[in-house]
Image 1 (spheres, rainbow, N blue to C red):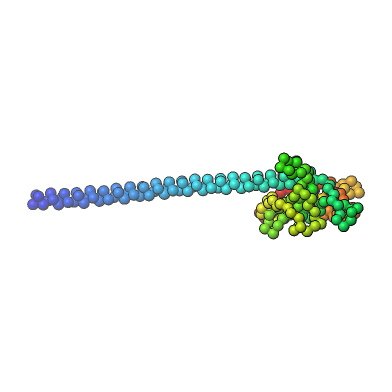
Image 2: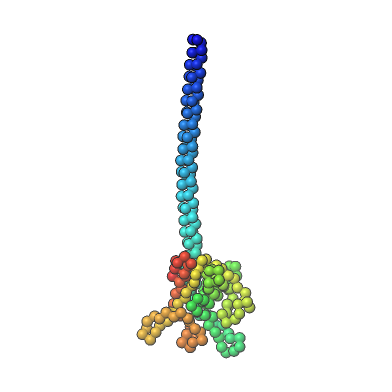
Length: 213
């Protein structure tokens, strides 16, 4: 009887020990899962913050590149010059290479002559295409607005993307010696024929609502 009692006690003690071991193992698993979840949250938060910072830097970099391109266009406008080209139908007539519309502009400008053979003049056309790109068509030879585009060889550069519209204004003096801003500089009008506007202003409206003047 004494041996059986001891055997029963040992069996009960073994079962209690196994239960304790099983409980301790479950606690460890729960702790490990909790720690893993916390570490995952920390890593996810860090990656999310890094992605937001990267996206912000990328947007700022794109905007800086875009604004530099717009500044370059503004510099071309500041260097605009009157350039005349002979009329192909009249040997005694010349036309000013300039056409100013509300959303399109042709003009001639000065540029630094380069060692690659480029001359000191550049001819440009600014407009927004159907894909919301502000584009600049340009060539080193005269780029004539009264001729068909397909008959002239030119290069094209995208100045800015996601552009809703570009709007040009042309300054002129009125009778009171004050500035009026016109939406069209019409070369067929004798008041504006064969002369450049004293100043040109342009604004670029983007599809996200931003406007750069």
